[in-house]
Image: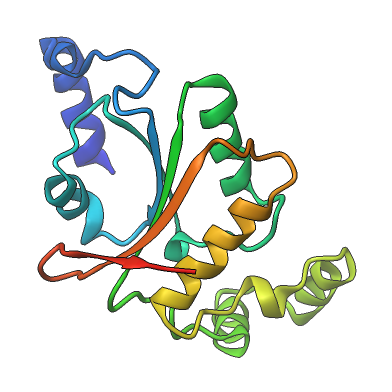
Length: 180
């Protein structure tokens, strides 16, 4: 972290930030929900030809919408209602690390990191379905399809917003449309 903080001080003090000044409204009136995978940090914008200021980019583990009121939906609705976004795209990708995670695997990791079974039980008792929250998905196509369906059926999503889904090949950057 020290290396990052040292560079940040240089960046801010040198005026390097000036080249990144853009408006808060995305030029392409587009928001993208995608995965937080490190391989997408530069690949996705390069493969789509998007630059700073073009789109709103929302990232999470797997690029998933888990339920109609999760933080991804909130971000997308704010993009539409407040930031002039007219189109939403969900982009999953091949070889996603979230695909294969399981509740038991994640619980084991929690226990290994010092979280107690009692803490896990208390969270579950508060209403969080940990089995669903900590599970992966069958394949990226079905994941994207499920997320797009939740968006399309959302009672607060205006009907004029275009919603589409794609799976990106993590090697080539090629997008394949997901239908349904």
